[in-house]
Length: 450
Image (tube, rainbow, N blue to C red; front, side, top):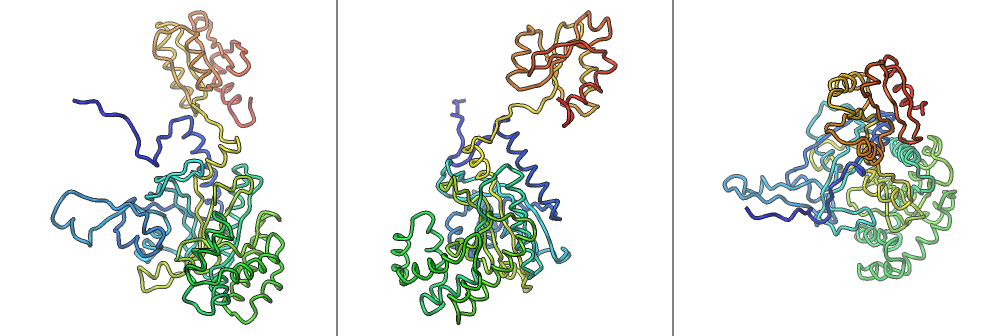
C-alpha cells in the first residue's frame, strides 16, 4: 500500500490538546452565560436539504458546500439535494416551523460547527469550517428581547477578558427609510445595504463608486449618512437623528426602535462607552428586518466582527404559514480565539491533569493503581506512569504537561504509610500521611487553594 501524505483540507484545522483545552474553557464561559439568561440547548444536523438553505442570503448561497453522492436512483433527484449548513439561524427557523409544541417565546442556544466555501483568512479568524455560538429568542415582537441579546453579548465578552470593544447598533427598518430618502424609491434597498456593509473594509470613496454602479447617488448617500453619524455614537441624540429623516416613516420608526433597544440595553447593565448607534452598520444578510448589531475591537480592526446578529421576523415564514418574530446573535469562537491570541491572552494548556503518580519501582505499581483509583473517585484528575523510567524523565513530563503535583511512593514511604508530594511550581517536596492525602490534595486543588 502506498503511503498517503497526512494533510488537512485548506481552511480547516486540527486542534491539539494545548489549543483545544483553552478553546473549551471559552465555550464554557459562553454556555454558562447563555444558561443564566434562560436559553435552552438545541442541536441540528450538519446536513440539510439544499432547498432549506438556499434563497435566504444571496451572499451565503455562493458559499454553500453541496454534498455530491455517487449512488444513483432516488438520491440523484433534486428533492434529495443536500448541503452542509452555513449558519445555525436557518436550521433554527426550520426547527421552529417543524415543531409546533415548542414554547413561545422559545429561547435557544446552539454551539456547532458550520461550513462555508470561503477564502480562508487565519489572521482574521476566518476558516471554511468554524464554530458558531448562537443565542436566539423567537415568538415575541418585544424589543426587550433585542436589548437582552446585547446585554448577553456584553456579559460574555467581559467574562472572556475583553475590556475594549464596541457593540454597534442600527436597524434595517431605518436603513430602508434611509435608502428611500437617498434614492427616492424602494428598489435600491438591498444594493444600498450591500454597498454600505463594505464601508469598514474599503472606505467611503470605493463605496461611493459601488453606489453609483448600483444606480445610487454616492455623494448624496455619503452626505446624508455622515450627517446622521454626527448625532449618533456612544451618546446619541435620537431627537436630532429623527429630525434629519423627518417625513420618512420607516427611517423614523427605525430610529425609534434603535432608541428603545439602546436605552433598554443600558438599563440591563451595558456600560457607557461599549454601545454605539452606528448608521453605517448594514450587515449583509437579506433576512434581517429590524434592529441589527455587531461587536468589533477598535484595537484589532482587521478582525471584523466578533459577534453579529439582529431581528429576522420573516425567516420562519419561509417554512410555515405562521409568521414568528425572532431576534438573536452569533458569537464566533474562532474570531474570539484569534482576538485573544493577538492580544496575548490565549494561553495554551497542554493538559488538564492535576496529579501524576510516579513509578518508583515495579513492586509499588499495585499500590499506585489503588492510589490512582482513590484519587479519581475523589474527583481529581490523575495520571499514572506506566513504564520503568528514571524519575528525571517523569518529572520532565510533568513539567512539560504543566501537571502541578507529582506523588511518589517508594519502598520507604510504603513501609511508613507516607506519600512524597512534589510541587512542580515551587520545587518543594515533602512527605505526608497517606491517610490525609485526599483531603490535602483537594484543599490544594480547590479554587481557594494553592
